Length: 442
Image (cartoon, rainbow, N blue to C red):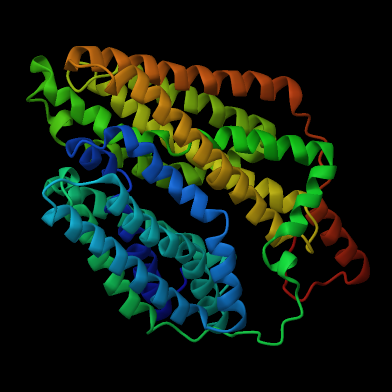
Protein backbone atom coordinates (compact mmCIF):
# COMPACT_ATOMS: atom_id res chain seq x y z
CA UNK A 1 0.00 0.00 0.00
CA UNK A 2 1.52 3.33 -1.10
CA UNK A 3 2.20 5.99 1.49
CA UNK A 4 -0.21 8.94 1.55
CA UNK A 5 1.69 12.16 0.97
CA UNK A 6 0.87 15.50 2.61
CA UNK A 7 -0.11 17.02 -0.76
CA UNK A 8 -2.81 14.37 -1.16
CA UNK A 9 -4.28 15.30 2.22
CA UNK A 10 -4.16 18.99 1.29
CA UNK A 11 -5.90 18.34 -2.01
CA UNK A 12 -8.53 16.18 -0.34
CA UNK A 13 -9.25 19.13 1.98
CA UNK A 14 -9.48 21.42 -1.06
CA UNK A 15 -12.01 19.09 -2.71
CA UNK A 16 -13.96 18.79 0.55
CA UNK A 17 -14.32 22.56 0.87
CA UNK A 18 -15.08 23.07 -2.83
CA UNK A 19 -18.19 20.94 -2.75
CA UNK A 20 -19.16 21.86 0.82
CA UNK A 21 -19.70 25.40 -0.51
CA UNK A 22 -22.21 24.01 -3.00
CA UNK A 23 -23.85 21.51 -0.66
CA UNK A 24 -24.82 24.25 1.79
CA UNK A 25 -27.62 25.46 -0.48
CA UNK A 26 -27.98 23.41 -3.67
CA UNK A 27 -30.48 20.89 -2.29
CA UNK A 28 -32.23 23.08 0.29
CA UNK A 29 -32.59 26.43 -1.50
CA UNK A 30 -35.97 25.50 -2.98
CA UNK A 31 -37.28 24.84 0.51
CA UNK A 32 -36.27 28.31 1.70
CA UNK A 33 -37.63 30.03 -1.43
CA UNK A 34 -40.97 28.32 -0.88
CA UNK A 35 -41.08 29.58 2.71
CA UNK A 36 -40.78 33.24 1.60
CA UNK A 37 -43.34 33.10 -1.18
CA UNK A 38 -40.94 32.54 -4.08
CA UNK A 39 -41.90 28.93 -4.78
CA UNK A 40 -43.03 29.74 -8.33
CA UNK A 41 -39.52 31.11 -9.10
CA UNK A 42 -37.50 28.13 -7.84
CA UNK A 43 -36.70 26.96 -11.35
CA UNK A 44 -34.91 30.20 -12.23
CA UNK A 45 -32.50 29.87 -9.31
CA UNK A 46 -31.44 26.45 -10.57
CA UNK A 47 -31.62 27.21 -14.29
CA UNK A 48 -29.19 30.11 -13.91
CA UNK A 49 -26.48 27.64 -12.91
CA UNK A 50 -26.76 26.08 -16.34
CA UNK A 51 -26.93 29.45 -18.07
CA UNK A 52 -23.71 30.79 -16.53
CA UNK A 53 -22.06 27.40 -17.13
CA UNK A 54 -22.38 28.00 -20.87
CA UNK A 55 -19.68 30.68 -20.79
CA UNK A 56 -18.21 31.52 -17.36
CA UNK A 57 -16.03 28.39 -16.88
CA UNK A 58 -14.53 28.86 -20.35
CA UNK A 59 -13.86 32.58 -19.87
CA UNK A 60 -12.35 32.14 -16.41
CA UNK A 61 -10.36 29.16 -17.69
CA UNK A 62 -8.82 31.30 -20.43
CA UNK A 63 -7.80 33.92 -17.87
CA UNK A 64 -6.26 31.24 -15.63
CA UNK A 65 -4.43 29.66 -18.57
CA UNK A 66 -2.93 32.91 -19.85
CA UNK A 67 -2.68 35.55 -17.13
CA UNK A 68 -3.54 34.56 -13.54
CA UNK A 69 -2.26 31.39 -11.89
CA UNK A 70 -5.09 28.89 -11.37
CA UNK A 71 -4.76 28.73 -7.58
CA UNK A 72 -5.00 32.54 -7.39
CA UNK A 73 -7.93 32.59 -9.79
CA UNK A 74 -9.62 29.93 -7.66
CA UNK A 75 -9.11 32.14 -4.61
CA UNK A 76 -10.44 35.24 -6.36
CA UNK A 77 -13.53 33.48 -7.69
CA UNK A 78 -14.40 32.08 -4.26
CA UNK A 79 -13.86 35.48 -2.67
CA UNK A 80 -16.30 37.09 -5.11
CA UNK A 81 -18.76 34.18 -4.92
CA UNK A 82 -18.68 34.39 -1.12
CA UNK A 83 -19.21 38.16 -1.11
CA UNK A 84 -22.26 37.95 -3.37
CA UNK A 85 -23.70 34.91 -1.56
CA UNK A 86 -23.14 36.59 1.79
CA UNK A 87 -24.85 39.73 0.49
CA UNK A 88 -27.79 37.59 -0.66
CA UNK A 89 -28.00 36.04 2.82
CA UNK A 90 -27.83 39.42 4.59
CA UNK A 91 -30.51 40.83 2.29
CA UNK A 92 -32.78 37.86 2.95
CA UNK A 93 -32.28 38.18 6.71
CA UNK A 94 -32.90 41.92 6.91
CA UNK A 95 -35.57 42.55 4.27
CA UNK A 96 -39.13 43.00 5.51
CA UNK A 97 -40.33 41.22 2.39
CA UNK A 98 -37.89 39.19 0.28
CA UNK A 99 -38.26 40.19 -3.37
CA UNK A 100 -37.26 38.02 -6.32
CA UNK A 101 -35.19 40.57 -8.27
CA UNK A 102 -32.56 41.61 -5.69
CA UNK A 103 -32.17 38.10 -4.25
CA UNK A 104 -31.90 36.53 -7.69
CA UNK A 105 -29.41 39.15 -8.90
CA UNK A 106 -27.06 38.62 -5.94
CA UNK A 107 -27.42 34.84 -6.17
CA UNK A 108 -26.72 34.86 -9.91
CA UNK A 109 -23.51 36.87 -9.44
CA UNK A 110 -22.37 34.41 -6.79
CA UNK A 111 -23.13 31.36 -8.94
CA UNK A 112 -21.42 32.96 -11.94
CA UNK A 113 -18.15 33.05 -10.00
CA UNK A 114 -18.68 29.71 -8.26
CA UNK A 115 -19.33 27.47 -11.28
CA UNK A 116 -15.84 28.02 -12.80
CA UNK A 117 -14.22 26.99 -9.51
CA UNK A 118 -15.16 23.33 -10.07
CA UNK A 119 -12.88 23.14 -13.09
CA UNK A 120 -10.26 25.38 -11.46
CA UNK A 121 -10.04 23.17 -8.38
CA UNK A 122 -9.48 20.17 -10.67
CA UNK A 123 -6.75 22.06 -12.53
CA UNK A 124 -5.04 22.98 -9.25
CA UNK A 125 -5.21 19.36 -8.10
CA UNK A 126 -3.84 17.96 -11.37
CA UNK A 127 -0.97 20.46 -11.31
CA UNK A 128 -0.09 19.64 -7.70
CA UNK A 129 -0.15 15.88 -8.35
CA UNK A 130 2.03 16.24 -11.43
CA UNK A 131 4.53 18.41 -9.54
CA UNK A 132 4.68 15.74 -6.84
CA UNK A 133 5.30 13.03 -9.46
CA UNK A 134 1.98 11.31 -8.75
CA UNK A 135 -0.23 9.69 -11.38
CA UNK A 136 -3.45 11.68 -11.76
CA UNK A 137 -5.51 8.71 -12.99
CA UNK A 138 -4.67 6.71 -9.87
CA UNK A 139 -4.53 9.44 -7.25
CA UNK A 140 -7.20 11.96 -8.26
CA UNK A 141 -10.36 9.80 -7.85
CA UNK A 142 -9.80 9.20 -4.09
CA UNK A 143 -9.21 12.95 -3.69
CA UNK A 144 -12.41 13.77 -5.61
CA UNK A 145 -14.42 11.44 -3.37
CA UNK A 146 -13.78 13.86 -0.51
CA UNK A 147 -15.67 16.46 -2.54
CA UNK A 148 -18.81 14.35 -2.30
CA UNK A 149 -18.10 13.81 1.41
CA UNK A 150 -17.88 17.59 1.83
CA UNK A 151 -21.16 18.05 -0.03
CA UNK A 152 -22.87 15.51 2.25
CA UNK A 153 -21.43 17.00 5.45
CA UNK A 154 -22.59 20.45 4.41
CA UNK A 155 -26.08 19.12 3.65
CA UNK A 156 -26.29 17.43 7.03
CA UNK A 157 -25.04 20.54 8.83
CA UNK A 158 -27.71 22.66 7.15
CA UNK A 159 -30.32 20.00 7.92
CA UNK A 160 -29.65 19.54 11.63
CA UNK A 161 -29.20 23.26 12.30
CA UNK A 162 -32.51 23.79 10.46
CA UNK A 163 -30.78 26.25 8.16
CA UNK A 164 -32.49 24.44 5.26
CA UNK A 165 -35.57 26.60 5.82
CA UNK A 166 -33.86 30.00 6.27
CA UNK A 167 -31.17 32.28 4.71
CA UNK A 168 -28.43 31.00 7.02
CA UNK A 169 -27.75 28.32 4.41
CA UNK A 170 -26.52 31.16 2.15
CA UNK A 171 -24.37 32.58 4.95
CA UNK A 172 -22.93 29.10 5.56
CA UNK A 173 -21.95 28.83 1.90
CA UNK A 174 -20.38 32.30 1.98
CA UNK A 175 -18.27 31.49 5.05
CA UNK A 176 -17.03 28.28 3.44
CA UNK A 177 -16.15 30.25 0.27
CA UNK A 178 -14.06 32.68 2.32
CA UNK A 179 -12.25 29.78 4.00
CA UNK A 180 -11.51 28.23 0.61
CA UNK A 181 -10.45 31.58 -0.87
CA UNK A 182 -7.73 31.72 1.78
CA UNK A 183 -6.82 28.04 1.61
CA UNK A 184 -6.45 28.08 -2.19
CA UNK A 185 -3.52 30.49 -1.90
CA UNK A 186 -1.52 27.80 -0.06
CA UNK A 187 -1.70 25.45 -3.08
CA UNK A 188 1.37 24.89 -5.32
CA UNK A 189 1.76 27.51 -8.04
CA UNK A 190 0.21 26.71 -11.41
CA UNK A 191 1.86 27.73 -14.68
CA UNK A 192 0.44 30.31 -17.09
CA UNK A 193 1.01 30.48 -20.85
CA UNK A 194 1.02 34.16 -21.73
CA UNK A 195 2.36 33.44 -25.20
CA UNK A 196 -0.41 31.02 -26.14
CA UNK A 197 -1.25 31.14 -29.84
CA UNK A 198 -4.50 29.24 -29.40
CA UNK A 199 -7.46 31.03 -30.93
CA UNK A 200 -10.42 32.21 -28.90
CA UNK A 201 -12.64 29.64 -30.65
CA UNK A 202 -10.24 26.87 -29.65
CA UNK A 203 -10.08 28.15 -26.06
CA UNK A 204 -13.86 28.24 -25.79
CA UNK A 205 -14.09 24.69 -27.13
CA UNK A 206 -16.07 25.68 -30.22
CA UNK A 207 -14.05 23.33 -32.45
CA UNK A 208 -15.79 20.40 -30.80
CA UNK A 209 -19.07 21.33 -32.54
CA UNK A 210 -17.53 19.78 -35.65
CA UNK A 211 -18.36 16.43 -34.01
CA UNK A 212 -22.00 17.02 -34.97
CA UNK A 213 -21.00 16.24 -38.56
CA UNK A 214 -20.63 12.62 -37.42
CA UNK A 215 -24.12 11.09 -37.11
CA UNK A 216 -23.29 8.75 -34.21
CA UNK A 217 -21.75 11.50 -32.10
CA UNK A 218 -24.51 13.96 -32.99
CA UNK A 219 -27.13 11.47 -31.78
CA UNK A 220 -25.12 10.81 -28.62
CA UNK A 221 -24.84 14.52 -27.78
CA UNK A 222 -28.53 15.13 -28.49
CA UNK A 223 -29.57 12.28 -26.20
CA UNK A 224 -27.08 13.56 -23.60
CA UNK A 225 -28.90 16.89 -23.71
CA UNK A 226 -32.27 15.10 -23.36
CA UNK A 227 -30.97 13.16 -20.37
CA UNK A 228 -29.45 16.34 -18.94
CA UNK A 229 -33.00 17.67 -18.66
CA UNK A 230 -33.44 15.44 -15.60
CA UNK A 231 -30.27 16.48 -13.77
CA UNK A 232 -31.51 19.39 -11.64
CA UNK A 233 -35.19 18.53 -11.18
CA UNK A 234 -34.88 16.71 -7.85
CA UNK A 235 -32.20 19.15 -6.69
CA UNK A 236 -34.67 21.96 -7.34
CA UNK A 237 -37.83 20.42 -5.95
CA UNK A 238 -36.90 17.34 -3.92
CA UNK A 239 -36.41 19.15 -0.62
CA UNK A 240 -39.56 21.29 -0.76
CA UNK A 241 -41.56 18.22 -1.87
CA UNK A 242 -40.46 16.09 1.06
CA UNK A 243 -40.89 18.97 3.52
CA UNK A 244 -44.43 19.56 2.22
CA UNK A 245 -45.54 16.36 3.96
CA UNK A 246 -45.27 18.29 7.24
CA UNK A 247 -48.37 20.25 6.14
CA UNK A 248 -50.43 17.06 6.02
CA UNK A 249 -51.66 16.01 9.47
CA UNK A 250 -50.94 12.30 9.08
CA UNK A 251 -47.29 13.00 8.16
CA UNK A 252 -46.61 16.16 10.16
CA UNK A 253 -44.49 14.49 12.84
CA UNK A 254 -42.60 12.05 10.65
CA UNK A 255 -38.80 12.16 10.68
CA UNK A 256 -38.55 12.48 6.89
CA UNK A 257 -40.78 15.53 6.70
CA UNK A 258 -38.57 17.32 9.23
CA UNK A 259 -35.21 16.19 7.84
CA UNK A 260 -35.49 16.40 4.06
CA UNK A 261 -31.84 17.30 3.53
CA UNK A 262 -30.64 14.36 5.62
CA UNK A 263 -32.90 12.03 3.64
CA UNK A 264 -31.73 13.36 0.27
CA UNK A 265 -28.09 13.07 1.37
CA UNK A 266 -28.55 9.33 0.79
CA UNK A 267 -28.51 10.23 -2.91
CA UNK A 268 -24.99 11.62 -2.64
CA UNK A 269 -23.86 8.63 -0.58
CA UNK A 270 -25.22 6.31 -3.26
CA UNK A 271 -23.48 8.41 -5.91
CA UNK A 272 -20.13 7.85 -4.21
CA UNK A 273 -20.58 4.07 -4.11
CA UNK A 274 -22.01 3.69 -7.63
CA UNK A 275 -18.86 5.13 -9.20
CA UNK A 276 -17.19 1.83 -8.31
CA UNK A 277 -19.67 -0.11 -10.47
CA UNK A 278 -18.98 1.81 -13.68
CA UNK A 279 -15.86 -0.05 -14.93
CA UNK A 280 -17.55 -3.44 -14.51
CA UNK A 281 -20.81 -2.31 -16.15
CA UNK A 282 -19.05 -0.66 -19.09
CA UNK A 283 -17.17 -3.88 -19.82
CA UNK A 284 -20.27 -6.02 -19.35
CA UNK A 285 -22.94 -3.90 -21.07
CA UNK A 286 -21.10 -1.32 -23.18
CA UNK A 287 -21.90 2.39 -23.38
CA UNK A 288 -25.42 1.87 -24.75
CA UNK A 289 -26.32 -0.55 -21.98
CA UNK A 290 -24.91 1.71 -19.28
CA UNK A 291 -26.70 4.77 -20.67
CA UNK A 292 -29.96 2.78 -20.77
CA UNK A 293 -29.46 1.70 -17.16
CA UNK A 294 -29.08 5.39 -16.28
CA UNK A 295 -32.22 6.36 -18.21
CA UNK A 296 -34.37 3.70 -16.57
CA UNK A 297 -32.87 4.67 -13.20
CA UNK A 298 -34.18 8.20 -13.79
CA UNK A 299 -37.61 6.70 -14.45
CA UNK A 300 -37.47 4.96 -11.06
CA UNK A 301 -36.01 8.03 -9.35
CA UNK A 302 -39.07 10.10 -10.28
CA UNK A 303 -41.63 7.29 -9.99
CA UNK A 304 -40.56 6.41 -6.43
CA UNK A 305 -40.94 10.08 -5.50
CA UNK A 306 -44.42 9.97 -7.01
CA UNK A 307 -45.62 7.01 -4.93
CA UNK A 308 -43.56 7.51 -1.76
CA UNK A 309 -44.24 9.49 1.39
CA UNK A 310 -42.54 10.20 4.72
CA UNK A 311 -44.70 7.70 6.60
CA UNK A 312 -45.22 4.10 5.54
CA UNK A 313 -43.87 4.95 2.10
CA UNK A 314 -40.54 6.24 3.40
CA UNK A 315 -38.78 3.17 2.01
CA UNK A 316 -39.81 4.26 -1.50
CA UNK A 317 -38.17 7.66 -1.00
CA UNK A 318 -35.06 5.87 0.28
CA UNK A 319 -35.08 3.64 -2.81
CA UNK A 320 -35.34 6.75 -4.97
CA UNK A 321 -32.23 8.14 -3.28
CA UNK A 322 -30.33 4.89 -3.79
CA UNK A 323 -31.34 4.76 -7.47
CA UNK A 324 -30.09 8.33 -7.93
CA UNK A 325 -26.49 7.17 -7.66
CA UNK A 326 -26.99 4.93 -10.70
CA UNK A 327 -28.97 7.57 -12.61
CA UNK A 328 -26.40 10.32 -12.10
CA UNK A 329 -23.07 8.48 -12.21
CA UNK A 330 -23.84 6.06 -15.03
CA UNK A 331 -24.76 9.02 -17.21
CA UNK A 332 -22.22 11.70 -16.25
CA UNK A 333 -19.13 9.56 -15.69
CA UNK A 334 -19.75 6.98 -18.41
CA UNK A 335 -20.75 9.65 -20.91
CA UNK A 336 -17.53 11.53 -20.25
CA UNK A 337 -15.50 8.34 -20.71
CA UNK A 338 -17.29 7.58 -23.98
CA UNK A 339 -16.58 11.05 -25.35
CA UNK A 340 -12.92 10.64 -24.40
CA UNK A 341 -12.70 7.29 -26.20
CA UNK A 342 -14.42 8.44 -29.37
CA UNK A 343 -12.55 11.70 -30.03
CA UNK A 344 -9.02 12.40 -31.16
CA UNK A 345 -6.53 14.05 -28.85
CA UNK A 346 -6.82 17.39 -30.67
CA UNK A 347 -10.52 17.60 -29.74
CA UNK A 348 -10.63 15.64 -26.51
CA UNK A 349 -10.71 18.56 -24.05
CA UNK A 350 -13.11 20.57 -26.23
CA UNK A 351 -15.38 17.55 -26.59
CA UNK A 352 -15.60 17.23 -22.79
CA UNK A 353 -16.59 20.89 -22.67
CA UNK A 354 -19.24 20.28 -25.30
CA UNK A 355 -20.58 17.32 -23.31
CA UNK A 356 -20.91 19.60 -20.25
CA UNK A 357 -22.61 22.31 -22.32
CA UNK A 358 -25.17 19.87 -23.72
CA UNK A 359 -25.92 18.25 -20.34
CA UNK A 360 -25.32 20.66 -17.45
CA UNK A 361 -25.77 23.73 -19.64
CA UNK A 362 -28.56 23.45 -22.20
CA UNK A 363 -30.19 20.24 -20.93
CA UNK A 364 -30.32 21.13 -17.24
CA UNK A 365 -31.45 24.71 -17.95
CA UNK A 366 -34.31 23.68 -20.21
CA UNK A 367 -35.27 20.84 -17.87
CA UNK A 368 -35.40 23.07 -14.81
CA UNK A 369 -37.52 25.74 -16.49
CA UNK A 370 -39.94 23.16 -17.91
CA UNK A 371 -40.13 21.48 -14.49
CA UNK A 372 -40.89 24.89 -12.97
CA UNK A 373 -43.85 25.35 -15.35
CA UNK A 374 -45.17 21.85 -14.55
CA UNK A 375 -44.81 22.20 -10.77
CA UNK A 376 -46.29 25.70 -10.77
CA UNK A 377 -49.31 24.42 -12.70
CA UNK A 378 -49.97 21.21 -10.78
CA UNK A 379 -48.67 22.09 -7.29
CA UNK A 380 -48.32 25.75 -6.42
CA UNK A 381 -51.59 26.72 -8.10
CA UNK A 382 -53.41 24.55 -5.53
CA UNK A 383 -54.66 25.99 -2.25
CA UNK A 384 -54.73 22.97 0.08
CA UNK A 385 -51.89 20.66 1.17
CA UNK A 386 -53.82 17.61 -0.02
CA UNK A 387 -54.37 19.09 -3.49
CA UNK A 388 -50.72 20.09 -3.66
CA UNK A 389 -49.71 16.54 -2.77
CA UNK A 390 -51.76 15.22 -5.67
CA UNK A 391 -50.06 17.81 -7.86
CA UNK A 392 -46.64 16.59 -6.74
CA UNK A 393 -47.60 13.01 -7.62
CA UNK A 394 -48.74 14.10 -11.08
CA UNK A 395 -45.54 16.11 -11.62
CA UNK A 396 -43.21 13.26 -10.64
CA UNK A 397 -45.09 10.87 -12.94
CA UNK A 398 -44.75 13.35 -15.84
CA UNK A 399 -40.98 13.49 -15.25
CA UNK A 400 -40.84 9.68 -15.07
CA UNK A 401 -42.83 9.37 -18.31
CA UNK A 402 -40.45 11.77 -20.05
CA UNK A 403 -37.43 9.73 -18.95
CA UNK A 404 -39.14 6.54 -20.16
CA UNK A 405 -39.81 8.05 -23.60
CA UNK A 406 -36.15 9.14 -23.90
CA UNK A 407 -35.00 5.62 -22.95
CA UNK A 408 -37.26 3.92 -25.49
CA UNK A 409 -36.17 6.29 -28.28
CA UNK A 410 -32.54 5.72 -27.34
CA UNK A 411 -32.95 1.96 -27.74
CA UNK A 412 -34.03 2.32 -31.37
CA UNK A 413 -32.10 5.40 -32.52
CA UNK A 414 -28.62 5.14 -31.00
CA UNK A 415 -26.43 2.63 -32.80
CA UNK A 416 -23.02 2.30 -31.24
CA UNK A 417 -20.54 1.55 -34.00
CA UNK A 418 -17.42 2.54 -32.07
CA UNK A 419 -14.33 4.07 -33.54
CA UNK A 420 -12.04 3.70 -30.53
CA UNK A 421 -9.70 6.58 -31.16
CA UNK A 422 -7.70 5.98 -28.01
CA UNK A 423 -7.19 2.30 -28.87
CA UNK A 424 -6.01 3.26 -32.32
CA UNK A 425 -3.55 5.70 -30.82
CA UNK A 426 -2.21 3.06 -28.44
CA UNK A 427 -1.89 0.56 -31.31
CA UNK A 428 0.08 3.09 -33.36
CA UNK A 429 2.33 3.76 -30.37
CA UNK A 430 2.97 0.04 -29.99
CA UNK A 431 3.85 -0.31 -33.65
CA UNK A 432 6.39 2.51 -33.47
CA UNK A 433 7.57 1.99 -29.89
CA UNK A 434 6.94 -1.48 -28.43
CA UNK A 435 8.02 -0.33 -24.96
CA UNK A 436 6.11 2.90 -24.12
CA UNK A 437 7.91 5.23 -21.77
CA UNK A 438 5.06 5.31 -19.29
CA UNK A 439 5.19 1.56 -18.83
CA UNK A 440 1.43 1.14 -19.46
CA UNK A 441 0.40 -2.26 -20.76
CA UNK A 442 -2.98 -3.01 -22.31
